[in-house]
Image (tube, rainbow, N blue to C red; front, side, top):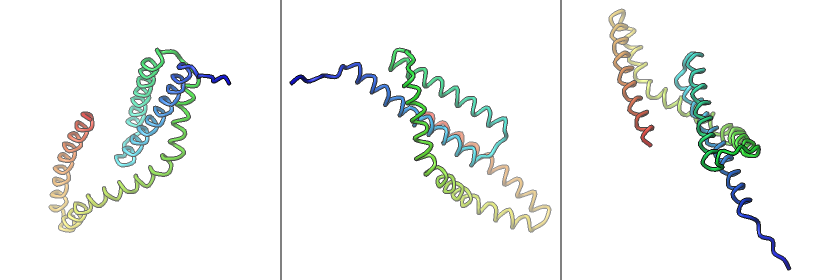
Amino acid sequence: MKVRIVSAGIYEELALLCCFFLLGVVLAASYDILRIFRVLVPHGTLLINIEDLFYWIYVAVVVFVTLYEKNDGRLRGYVFGALVAGMLMYTVSFGRICVPPLIRFLKKVESILLRPFRRACTFVGAQGEKGRKKCGKVWLVLKKRLKKLWKMVKIGLCKL
């Protein structure tokens, strides 16, 4: 009885296929993070286009570097197929099931955190023109502090 041994090259190609499938999942998840950010912090079309441009530059660089490191830069059709399959698998399963509830949860948290400020503004607004001016000043101070907090969070995330 003859036992056939599969060559090491086949295992390398299979590992490459799995690597790019997982890379597709990671890239789709990172785009979902961008989508969640867009829902929580609404902004204009120009900024959305710029974000998309930077996202796709990021994707191109990551795919190029991974291809270069894992496959010596050789292009393989099945590698890009695995990448697209990973993105589609994530989008159809986890992305579609978990992202909308996560967005609703984060919006709820945001509304709970901002509720005291809205009530204070309503109360101050009921006090007349002076109250509205105070509310505007409070909003500017709060906005400035939130920007500083957001900057610290971004710096902390970059260090991960």
